[in-house]
Length: 609
Image (tube, rainbow, N blue to C red; front, side, top):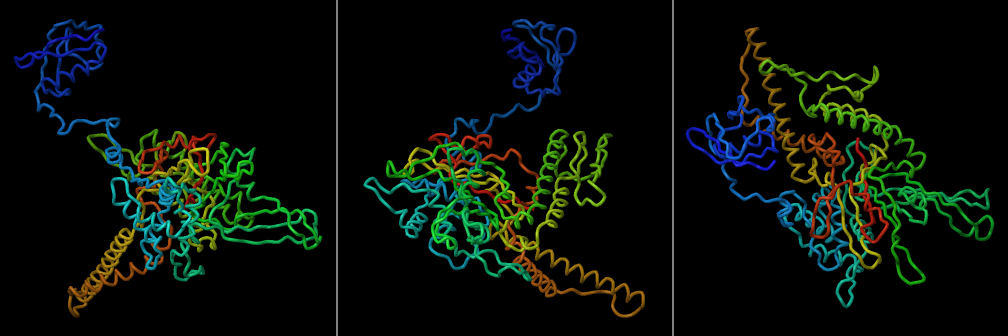
């Protein structure tokens, strides 16, 4: 039915209103509210047969053109127009979108510098790096420029001009200063990642805790980004020849892309299992050897290089391999480890996989029953309605330290923080003691994808690089900056000082009561300003001492607000200075198969306990 022009009468005044029979009566009441200011909940519209109800059928009422409706109700203040005109997202420019969506800043392209921008943005997904840079006292010019650039990016709202960093990078790595008649040459983002990582090798890492058997002074890259690979070379032709075993530190693992490579793990295994021809000492001639390489140490951040560029002899230059290779957002690295390391990681890895399944079940229950994840377990009566308290969870077994996953029809859960504390205690007990003391080593062998560098185009010496970073990787975390560490120390200092103060007061009260009962001595205890200052000074010292072996050494952990997983965790797309939100569902479009953006360098972060 077509809209009808009707009138409403209220307090002796008439108003023209449009009635659309295709919309529910509530929409008509809203139009009346806009004209009269009578709130809908205090409004009564008289129609044939009584009062107009919100679920009434207009066909039964039969409104007509020009009909007058009587309205009863007290008018309130009319709604005020917005101080600023409403602006929709599609009408905003990039700067306004970045401000509204709280996007991180991009880096201005200074002429074929997309390779550098993508590398810097991807490396920003390593918050521990920024902590070490902020604490280092002696740094190279490149380290200092990286630190200053990240500080500038954290405090800026628009595109950042990375001129000083680019100058330091070209001075440290002259190949990035190569020029053509048209300007600076395009460079390889994987080369940039490798060169930057190598130039950060002298950056001091996290100090070992007191009493630990770990080396007291270790470098950051060795701790968090370097793995140890063991290679066993065995002769195929001479079975009695003993195999040769060697080991080395690696900053990345390769993923070879062959004609039959469809998945990342298959490409990695192809790179780890190779065949070489070399001089055999037992046969006195060249012989074929099988080389089997496995990782004996997994770092917190595992870098995977998709080998998409290969040298073509027929054309005399590098060409891009456009084959589609699927990569996982969650990677189980136990398949590429040595038997010894796999045995140490397997208990915690298996239990963590079970726990994640239980978390997923709890998440479903909370969504279905709308149980607040962080609500306290309380019971109260409000206006005669009883609020039900969370029930105690049923453990897996008699000695199970953690709660089991809820059943499909279970709607009573404890706060998620309670479950996480139980899970953390159980997982930490399963971690191997040697791995636990190895700062920066993966304790689980399970990884989450946090950053990707892609290449767009068909040629190796041209094209465009873009970075994709997971939102949660750029979120604020505990001790992610010097100020955060300082605030933590201050809070601890106040707590320790308060504990000392209360101990003194309670001790004095106890002595006073004893003296009063026995009739001996004073019944009061005097605490001077100097006493309080000494307590606070001692508290600061204790907080700083503990921080040097905990906050400063342990890998960053999420804050209490982050205890509930965000299963809809989208990504940021960094296309030079243009930054946008990239849905996680579209990550599969980056696995190659054409000239569009193809995953080139992937950064995985170890799941923590």
